[in-house]
Image (cartoon, rainbow, N blue to C red; front, side, top):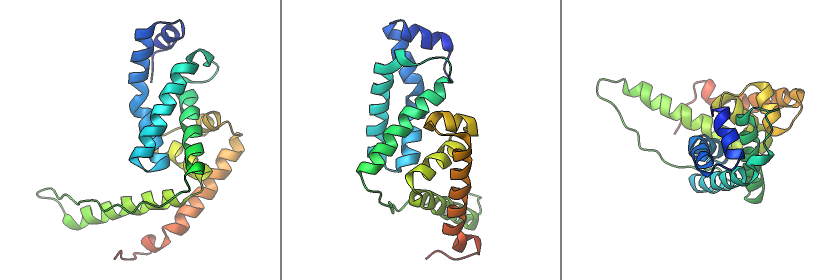
Length: 182
C-alpha cells in the first residue's frame, strides 16, 4: 500500500513525505468510512478526522503492525464512534438505472437491485458486525488484519463474521427465494 521509506520519512518530520503519505491513503480511508457509515457526508467527516489523527499520531505508528491495519483501526474506531453518536438510519436512496447499449436489461436491473439489497442489509447490521463485514468483504482484509485493525481477538472476529453472515442471510432470504422487489 505505502512504501515503508515514505512512512519513515514522514515520521522523521519530512513535511512533503507526510503530505504525500496522506494523499496516498485518503481514498482508502474515505472508502472504508463510506462502507461503514453509508452516508457521503458522514464518511467525508470521518475520513477527514481520521486523516488528521493519522497526521498528528504518525510518530506513534510502530512497524510491529502493518501500516494499513494501523490506519484501518483509526478509521474504523472513528466510524464506530460516529455511528454510536448518530443513531443508525437506513438510507433509501433512489438510484438512476443506466442501461448500456447491447446489454441485457433484465440482468442489469437484477444486478442493481441485488447490490441495493446487499447494501441495505449491511446497513441493518450492528456496528461491530458491519465493521468486520466491510473489512473482510469490501476491503479484502484477512482475519488477522481485521483482528489487528479492530483490536479484537481472532476468534471474536471469526464469530462476528459468522453471525453477520447469518444475519445477512436472514435479511436477504426473500431475495434468495426469488422474491420480487416492488
